[in-house]
Image 1 (cartoon, helix red, strand yellow):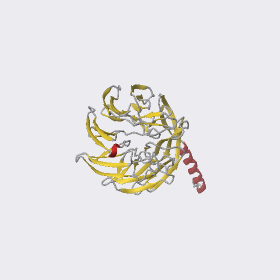
Image 2 (cartoon, helix red, strand yellow):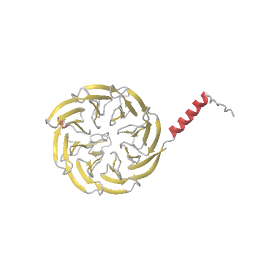
Image 3 (cartoon, one colour):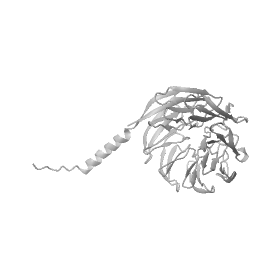
Image 4 (tube, one colour):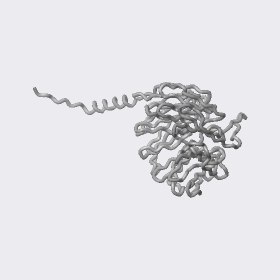
Length: 390
């Protein structure tokens, strides 16, 4: 019997490809696995081990939550704001609350040590005359997270110091000051025995730990056009001799690690801050902007934009980047009653995959667990555990 060949029309192949692509693109969903309500808004990003996630809120409650069911394993009460992500090391969890640094047992929450910085609490009054402690202005929602290097935890402080605490004992091992004791909200980086950090006046520092001297300093702007402008308040990331960080500044300045000179600058046309924490993945830089409402993917060598995805929310935090996705939170810096969202984009081109809406802003940087759960906090006081479903 002669078998006749059937030739599929080219336009049918194209049609089937489009249908498959749309189906594949829309297949991803975010399903709520659990939700934990707390008494204060969550600005700190959670961190996780194999069994627990750890996060604190602005009422001073630090907690460990079971990943499988969202049950609270333990709570630890402090006396002030918790705004920065904790650090996990050697079965301990380290975090800062209201200028006090704590080390707790990961399994039990038992305190191992604490280190207190004794100086007057920073505070400001809002337009209604209400006083806010441990904040420098209305948009002061980010604080320094610790960086571990050779058993020492380096962290920036509100009194203008970068200190190093022994991770086992909490003893002070290191301390240097920024110019004019300018507060430090950036999370430091230690690379080859040199520590990099930025201050509230927009100055970046490189200090040699062995030589015990500053190698260079760099001002990131010349004029301060308004009061909330210029403070450096993100992590620092290195890449091919370059230093990446975000600031309250529409000019994203990338500096040379060796001497602090500018390698390239991106000027945002909207004038919005590029304040998201930098993430480098597969030779691409990912950073979020505030008033431009955009997640941007850059070529880190020259600053050219690969893609830019604009939505309707400010971005303050750090994205999670995987082979397939860019995952981040967004919110409204000016209206606390507005909704927030957790967004997933395609890493290849920035197209929207899906999003999950919350009743208030999401300025808490998400974490992706080994079991591919996405965990984040919201200004509504809740901590969410989501599963990405195909």
